[in-house]
Each structure stands twice: as structure tokens, then as C-alpha cells.
Length: 68
Image (cartoon, one colour):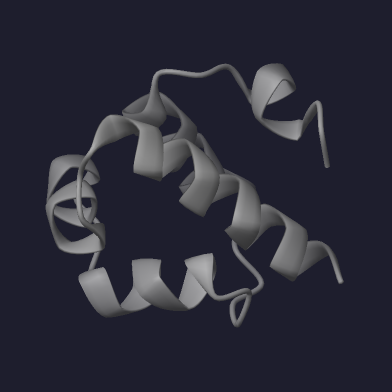
């Protein structure tokens, strides 16, 4: 499912930052429990929130979706 693929991609890229879910969620101004559910593929995340996450990961939207 696409939500699982997006969550896995976020987790993969976040792990390279060395930040926990909590620290990363704080960095981008997102609730940790919401962010955790996105990483688990349990949320139908909006493109606005995907943009917040990709900005926090310092990757472009096209780079983020390249392998999905």
C-alpha cells in the first residue's frame, strides 16, 4: 500500500539524520504520535505534511518519491 511505502521511505531517510521520531517531529513542528503513525503507514498523509517532512529531511519531493 502507498502509505506503507511512504512511511518506510520516511523512516529510511530519518534514520540517516540520527534523530529519533520525537526529535525529528519537534524539528518539523509535528506531533510525535502523528509522525509515528505516518512512519507506520497508518495515516493518509497530506502533501502539505509530506513537504514539511521532506524539508526537514533536506530532500526534494522528486528525490523523496523517486524510489516509491
